Length: 66
Image (cartoon, rainbow, N blue to C red; front, side, top):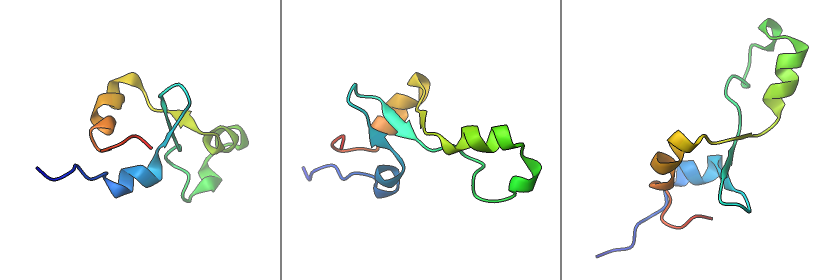
């Protein structure tokens, strides 16, 4: 049976942390910043962690966790 391939789009969007979690970027950061407060824009800049409920689904996209 051939090796499982990593879903390349997912590999570019998530980074593995030392404890096995996954870092991700916030949504709503592409454009239309005039409708967001300065505080909201500042918080959206920071990375976020993938929730436990989404972890299983996302891990299936990785053949090997990078």
